[in-house]
Length: 283
Image (cartoon, rainbow, N blue to C red; front, side):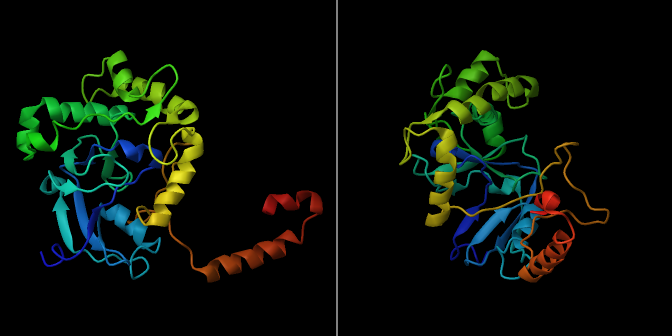
């Protein structure tokens, strides 16, 4: 393919926990999901689902607002065993591996793997390491997966520095498909890890995870290792995502300034019609 030898190409995962990237051991893709490769404004190429690419196009990632140029369409299984260089991790090279629980309508369809502190990741990595037939099916060699072990990156009081391993063992998680036990493992690790966990690695070592999250995010954006990306969120009342009445999917977009300006004028005019005691409702 003409772009591949010359253009820096990224599998583009989303990560709401940037502090956990120190513990990456691999990158997950779903073998049955459809992905696309598309150029972004920096001249690089991103790989994600079509839905996520459209979100990025409306967030000013691409040269033309709201438009993506598809360079290549790929099935996840075609991307298995690809060598990657990942930010922050102690491993020089990590590989793309199959994860069967990835959802096409969430994130970019590309998932970072942190088996030290994410029970889903630990269970899936253990599946690939234990099941030779699974590795053979997707062309994964032993060297791509067997040497990779969970990396201690966060110490959680009462749990330790490999919280996902501890939780999966405690709740006897059998595989990545063991949903009920994985939910218990995640309940045990996630909230306590965020509010009480202490980082063990990196320039913010010794800080509480809660404190370090925004600092690490800022560091990565400033260095060009990450970009800010948003998606439509679930409604707090219905726990459902917004849907369109037409054939299109909702996106999060950067609204042109003129629209914001007109809205601000209207709100300001409306604001003056109300008594000062109610004005805060419009701020």
